[in-house]
Length: 408
Image (cartoon, rainbow, N blue to C red; front, side):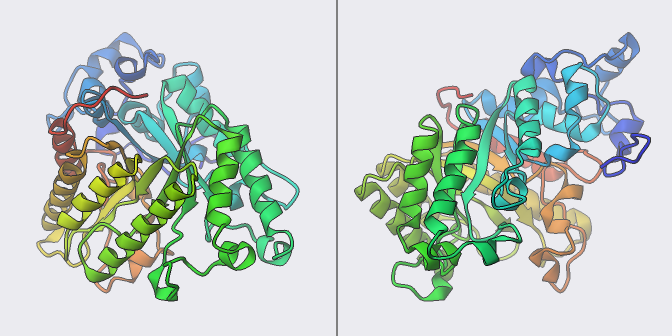
């Protein structure tokens, strides 16, 4: 956000800005020009930062992923983007620069959720989501839509307005309007998000939530078929979390997710991809053989796989900040290498770029309930937009991935 005089208050230049280095090198990635830099500024860009590290241009995560035919991207808050500056090729905003430099695909962290798009039952507001679309178009990126049907992120009016008599109408209207508004502008949609929850005890594993209670289990099929009609070109995705490791609960949930996908395919439902959220923990069990088998079975169904929301929490790891950073980086390297070894995994998105704005560090989030919690660094960049150990581990895993046919 900005103050009345336009001064950015949610971001700070930090170490890189002080060194004159956190300026976008977007032209080598997107063809967007120099953003009005002076000749002196251009020379500064040729210098390495204080740590001797240049991660812009060809050295960015997006460029390294593209070299293997992969898409790398991140969740973004469109309100923080200096879209007007990008439009005239002149911005000094570090948040905007970081996304322009590092990503080839974007997803809105919140701006496409129900509560953000529907301030009232009879009114839609696309202004913030459209801002992200414009930024993507100006910088040559593609976009994922997140999400069309979820039990969370519902507007305040929902509970008093939507009922068994009108739920089907509200869901189909929402999907037709939203997916229709962005028709042809998104690569994929998370159509249904987090529909499996074993704790509710249903034989099919479905989460007991408003859409299930008001429409029934076929709300999932309804959502996918409606989305396909509204945007037949988008890859329609089922997205879920807590299925990555071989812990009994996650293995059981993974099996139910696979069963759901099989039911959808058997019924001719137009699901095209599986989104593995990948909110991971450095402590405890790590992904392994079960996830590899899951990838193989999803591929056999003819579905692509996307890593959609990756971050790593280091709570429970000793050794201070350095120890936690090393543990986080190891998870990034190991997990990305495991997943990207399967050529059916087409993209990797982290849930943000800068750790300072990660949901993990939001005091209202569940992560803060860990007894030893302190400020986490769950993403490829730290609070000052300098690369963390995780950046290098992730980039190394991208470099080691089999080459795919180029995307985006």
